[in-house]
Image (cartoon, rainbow, N blue to C red; front, side, top):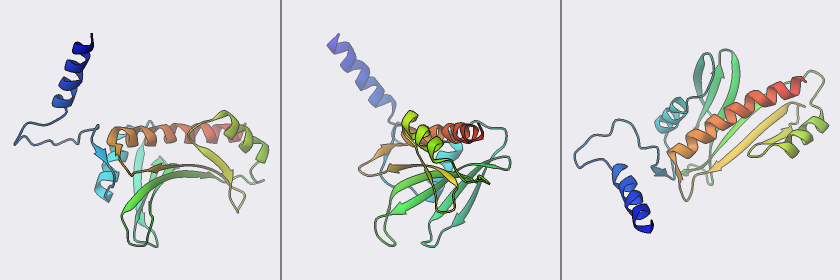
Length: 169
């Protein structure tokens, strides 16, 4: 049994490595990355298979020159993906996802606390304008797989919809 597991693990490792000289047009989802450029982030968002009717991505530069990615389903925003550095003009060390819900009467703190008590992986809070916010961060160092990043994005998009529905109750 031990030998067959080791053989299987070796097979998986070898199968994930492209042959010498073979072009790999699609990135390996098990590839570990510790930094990403804008094209890689765009590709990860696109390949995350976010459920929705009409998913579009809009981009804009922030004050530090980093690209912020806004993912919409039609006209509704599902998430905003931000890049963070530990030092000015440094390498991107983490990613953040968030989405806000403007509530005319202001967010109910009891509902926000109830959400946090029942839900893992994301954090809800009320911002300075009284909007209900949902947020999560992902540290890129010492490394994370591309598949983990895709699942992190997909999971947050799911929570984003659930959070919006929860606030309407």
